[in-house]
Length: 272
Image 1: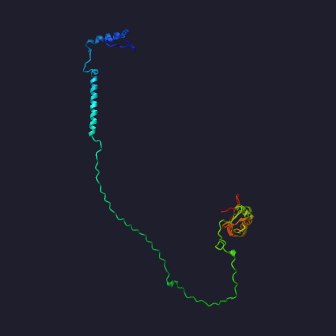
Image 2: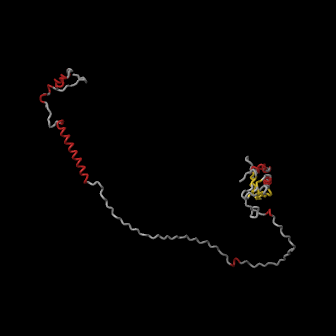
């Protein structure tokens, strides 16, 4: 016998199935007849026990549960009035600390002793006393002619940057046009150019109140004899100068000008 999944089994002896208008299937009738022969339907209990029926005891159980819950809740609020929830007090024992003044420890500073110096033998008198030497008498022929007094010192030979020639000023003298003006008139010595010699010359220049060069002097020479000094002095004398000023008044002042000769594209003159 095969069963279809859409077939339903009707309960045994159920009066409700008789009200269904749909006719009972052959499978249901066969199944009911089979179980009817095996089980006696008359022996099955028709009514439930009232003691075990939960639907009958539902109302009583619900009322009893609500009553117990309310009683416990009210009792909890009443008990909370007499129960203190504050934390227990902890007693702190007093601790006495004694402070004792300890005197500072004296530290002795030991200075290292100098090592003894090596002894130097001192010559005795016997070793240092020279022997007696006999000196023969000599005659001196002195020419007591009158010697002319030395010439008076030349002011130009004095130190040009000493206290005698020091003149305070607010603005130092400078060439008009800067060092480029000196470079314009500077001629590199031909002999030095051929030999590839470079040098630097420091020239002292006395600039007058009108801006003219009164005196020149070589403070530092090149150490060669190829004409660096002459070329530097010639270029400096051809330049017009701006005199030094002190409170808007022109002053005659010495100034040193370094002139550097270099065989480069940037030019033979540079100012340090």
